[in-house]
Image (cartoon, rainbow, N blue to C red; front, side, top):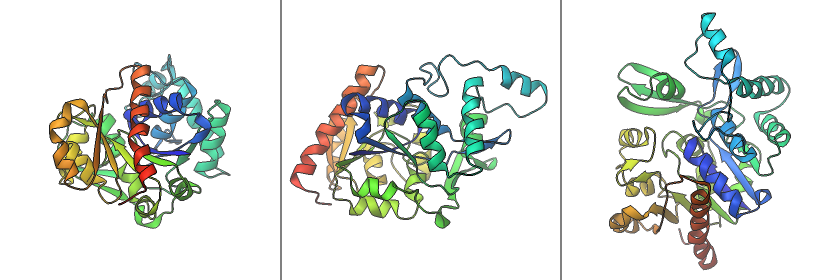
Length: 315
């Protein structure tokens, strides 16, 4: 079994590539839920949805989120009625949130996620990081706000001073999460934002420890290329954590459990900075601009991590 920790659009692309090179039944995906929000009275799980849609083959290629070919009639009508409309829910996407909210009256988020994924024909196992609420809060010069307010409403244009994961100290990992890390053949960290996509997962008590203790090798794919984020605000958010915006900064974020970092070919000159921390570095094309590129990167990540597995984990 290959276990992946993921969140965001880069994570969804990577998982799409992974199930092209490994049978989806052999893949478990642990997903960030720190971005979850209530919208129009509905429970919305943006990262869970992106992973589910990606694996079901219906993720919008144009937007990188939501359902391909979706319409937005309900959104426009809600705007006319005076409801907040900055978080753009498509009409078919809305059905997912309606169904999840109904299921959550009697089931856990793990159970609701499994049912929705099964009805969409997804064969990989998708797990939320926790069934309990953890909220990513971003401290900005305009005050503290949720991640979605910062990312979507403000389009991450306001200066950031810090990030916290509200409620993390009181929650537990969702059933199956620790076992998926402990029993994996390999653990892969997708090229997701280290602070607000992977950070919330690592904030859940027990998960970081499981990554340190697993016998499986752990590899991460860098979302930083040439000293800048491939997309989104990862660079600015890394600065708030005292992390350099480089592949060395990505390795530093995961240094207590990371065995191998997969970096873009353009960052070869920075390999020494990473290797000095005891982390191996492998290089590949990390820009996933096509389905073959997604599969190529996933294959490169597996090829890099398997020698570490054969040699035995040393960290």
